[in-house]
Length: 194
Length: 92
Image 1 (tube, chains in turn brown, yellow):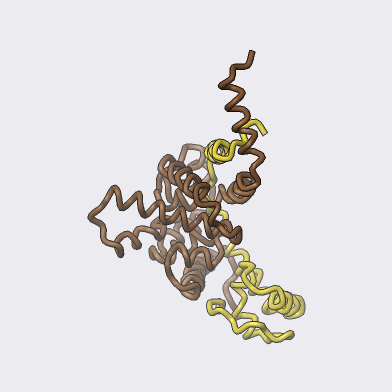
Image 2 (cartoon, one colour):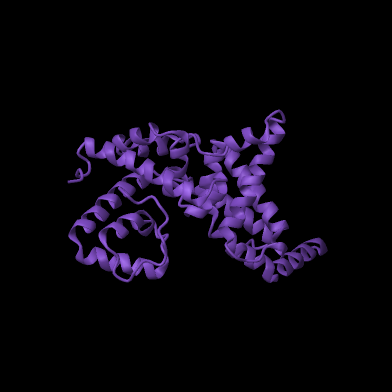
């Protein structure tokens, strides 16, 4: 037997599911969950905090979806993610100045976040020369490598997240990759330039 | 590796080695306009020196990308469930 309340809830769910706005939102965000999870982990450096951050981002995005023009969903979501993270940091550390907040955004490690045993085991099999080369980069260089090469952001998306011009992202990426290349060449991992 | 500056766009239809070197990073990252992408690809087809450089840079980028930490599939599943909950799509 189905109670009236259950019928009401079911009807409500059907109404929402049939809502083209809800369906459009769903399509836009499901495609970006991996990127959001990666960037959130980089910002928070913690799996649980990253998941909370993405959920809060999705909630805010859903509430504001009516004002979204539908173009560049990833950039839109990353902006919300970034602002949500800044708000969370600001609540925890109200003493931080704006420029200090901005400084917290670039990734500080090549991977960020705490890793499970399985992830750690997999990473141990990866090339230690590359890992060491990345670890030796400056924080700014590591940040662009992390966002572009590891998280899959475009130059523009990385520039927006770091609040620097796109040319700066390209320049840092060039220098960072050049340093990795030099180290790989020194270890015979790639051929040296003639 | 001389691929740091955003190139003047569009490239000439038949760019020289210097022009290709300037945009190689953007080309390999898929950040060039379609017309410029075609011009660089055509150059790499017939220029052995630039082709070798592109292969080397690609290997560097791939080596870096292999360092990408894996995502927790359960976490992504939970986030997808959260989206379903938001949009009332449970049970689809």
